[in-house]
Length: 469
Image 1 (cartoon, rainbow, N blue to C red):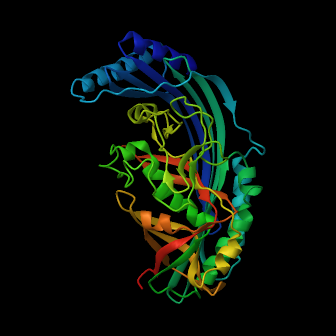
Image 2: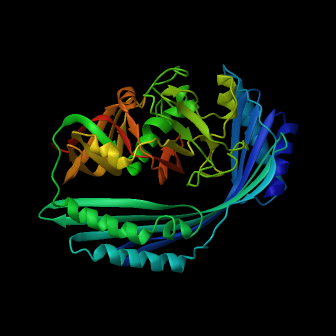
Image 3: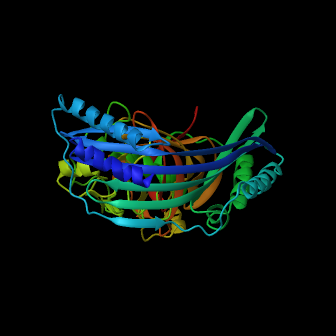
């Protein structure tokens, strides 16, 4: 595979391409779904292939091959990619230019402390299921667990040659309680880039299972919230989804340029670099070097990964860039390109977008609130095309009165307008947590990507209501 990849770059340049990169990838995946004490199904897959991307006469061409068998097959596929680029270049008004990027030759093996095997994952799954169903009000227990091994070799015509090997271990748990016609579910995802330590040591999946069961049961007795604009203190799990939807996605330079408009939308702050878009308390980063499902040393253009400061003290200072968009913005590429697999062209994707921690103790943040809500744990987002108006439901909330936490609330939605909410932020906690995100979609054809998102407790002003109230 590595030899085929290197030969492909040579064929492309010989055929008239000005640039070529190839990703040779192998993925092994094993997992299962467990519901109410029974295995619904096991999954096992193995896939490998080449993703060949060429730039010819200012236009991109792409061709992918599964399990290439011969050099002739690789050569013909590379030629097809070049022909495609040349065809599209004839009607292309603006020619693609690439920002300079340093050449690297490197091999990276991400560490795994406890190698998962499927039988051991299943044993853990049954234990979690037993914990969830031990709560008498639980109607359904659902768990899925997955272990994936990735080997990625990147080579380009500039001379970069990079191998990266890593493993992901992920567990999803859902507890559904039902009583007197009311159904409430609480779910959680644990895991990250690594082995069993990601679900046993870093975030213990057994404790998570106990938590989701207990909280789902408690929500059967919870009240609903009246609609009002109030102070909200958001916990890190909820902030993770907020960071993802209204900070991460609009920071992707292709959205800023309107290149994703027809499919997934743009960014309301396009053209606002250097302008104030939030309070002085708001600082936002995207950092591939933070341990998470978005952890990598090089992106899928071979650009060295580093932390990107996106918002500094409320000022928009940067976007996530590819080599192509960096040329348009007259800046440096900053390791923002990734593809779901060799069968797709890479896109600008967040790695681990987070609101940075502040100086506040979370309990002190709550004590200062006379009338408000503690918003906990992510659920379902609804965001407009420009990421301007947003609505995100939480799994549960608590009323705050005179600095004290009161009754538990269910089916709560938090709504805001991006600049208004950002400017209302007056406190960020000392705590900082990164949460796993496993199902972010972007592009056409759709690419589902894994990443991390997170932050501390954050306090601001938003509209709160319960569904149907």
